[in-house]
Length: 408
Image (cartoon, rainbow, N blue to C red; front, top):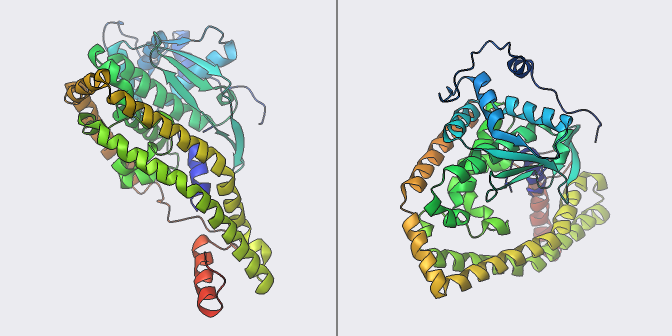
């Protein structure tokens, strides 16, 4: 029922990982302010490199980030212009400026590439092209870390481009370089790394006035539940743990494995359920002479749900495989030693500070969303002349009472 809204979120957010991004045209040029800076005629005085920039000095932050963000070796003039524009637009956000100042103070660095991403498709939403697929990712083990941005961003979906870039640069790339060396073996087991990056991207988006997607609203309503749900949808998140879970991960992984097996076992019944809904709609149209077109949106939703089943099945199989590997590893002597280190790491000041920062970002995001500037979604959007799922369910109840259809 919520699939359409989830698609909209994936195309518009960042989400990530997230856990999604053809009109021809040149990438947007740098802002006038940015051009002035590099022409040497800027109004803001560029201070000595050794003095950390103020978080509100956008002009100097641009200069300092330009010193630390290296264009990929194969980046042409058009891509370099797009990168400069991304940096400037990102720093319109107070949160981005604040975090960029930390990036500079840490003397963090990054290299950026625009690359083709397999499986990317373009969707037209409200007349605009949106990217569906992998929007970007960070290879944190590189020196310096590598950020890969979806090449479609050179032409389309400029709002999502800036949000994705902030997620990768000021989330993953910054934290990869200020994490103490003794904690890096545990980096891929820390969920707060991903949550921090998501929050940075969402704050940049909200501060730009971009309407939040459903996942952002769900997160604000119940952050812990939303973060936990990532593990049931993406193989690369499933082994990540909260700081509390790091102290004793085996029961967490066993529960996730049981939940994954149950979800996989329910897929066939979901297929049968969808087929029965189609049959019931046929009954309403043929036996009760209801307008066939009034079920168009529901039919499309059913079609999408059925189309996703093979990918969902594959995804759950991958999640199960990851969980079984982790549990097998943790049952070994080497794994038990690693768990001891993981439990110790959970009490490290770095992770505690990052949890405190996440709490601060959560409160900041909630304040923005609930300020009245944005409209909280009610339910599945209703289109005139179209039945909603709730209405279809009511029709089924009446049918079962008066003339049993056979049940769903």
